[in-house]
Amino acid sequence: MMKWLCYWKQIQNHSFEYRYKKPLFNTRGVDRIKRLSYEVLDEHKQKFGEDFADNKKVLDQIAVIRSKGLKNEIAGYITKFIKKEIRDEKIKQSQIESSKVENHTLQEKISDDDSTEEQVIEIVSEPKSTVTEE
Image: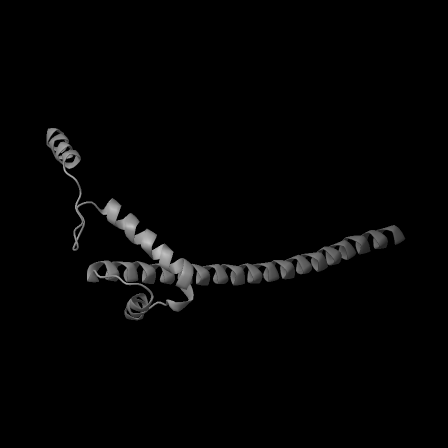
């Protein structure tokens, strides 16, 4: 516990400097990458796809990013985001198709149940009519 407090005081006393390779703390770096990625995606989403190399080339054409590491991180996040959207869309479509199949089978069961109920009613009504005749 004491070691953690000493470390926390060191963090508070030092200002954060931009590092190209890996930031000291991911929270600031991740927020920056997400923000920049969303800014690019808002205007040019149709140009990006599932391939990282293609996304990197498109990013070179759209924006001027001097840092190779930053460009790679932004292109990687955009690629991950696009893949996630496509995967979610496929899941949504499969759920819609499965619900249609379930509804269709449910309607068949209901129609089968209706016909069996009619048959049961006919069977039940027939013996009563024969019993009254005797």
